[in-house]
Image (cartoon, rainbow, N blue to C red):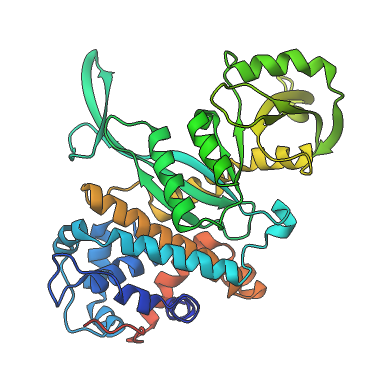
Length: 416
């Protein structure tokens, strides 16, 4: 399965060629950037949880690793952890852009059914790990109390942009938070880079309430991009304006996902002085029945009500139901993104505590995540998905099992 996965990536995405284009910064000719990144990428395809696990697998199957990589030596894990500090992060990020562009050209996302033909992306922050002992120059700090004593905790946080409402929810870009800077500042850097390097890739950006910033929204308006953000703060002018106009709007009643939904569509609102254009609001009230067991062990029907408010610049040609769907789809970055990355791909594990090494490993994990998703959805037949593998979480186990059976199958990679 590893050979099939690698051949698929090599044929469709030119994996070996793009790895060979990575710049070696401070690497030796024998242990260069391409060679070490290939080893790490294979380890992430196998979803190994740490460098120690990778070292054990390499020692246990040293002959197979040498034949697969077509080399006479295997570097130590200490060498890999030190050299990863000088990784070509920009080259790895460029390879992610190439693979995502290729997937779109191959019509792999199938956005017509779920997102009305629009490329929808969600941006959210994610904290990877924290420690009270280890730190680096780029660590963020916060104070907490442990047994009555104030302790400084060090942690790293990143802003991640991921596609939603599509079959292959690829990671588009990652931006680390700098010390003494907030998540909003990092998201602005991320969006500026996306608009510069991939201006036509995303049509709609979905945000949490934190991202309701006039400068950020004006930047998207100038780039002719749509945005949808949750409104939660009751002290905002937009929230109060919606409260005043809501009784005058005729509601739309519908049923979505077994819930009775009432929608209010408000157009041409002005809630910020610094916002260049007027915006639109969609308010929803969702009532869903849930069965629970009471003390007498009998099922009792309970009605659960949720209230949501979204602000957007999407025109009225897109109905309130579409705004409702896009607004709720923002949670896909948690469910299909961070949840899968953390539980199955060890996204939160600090492989080597160095700012560049941590970011490089996040990108390598993202490449393995994107390509595994593409391989599972585009290359495997339904019978193999259902019987042999079952789901993507078992794909790595199948790769590990078949890795031992390769017995020296050479991957199309020759280190210089």
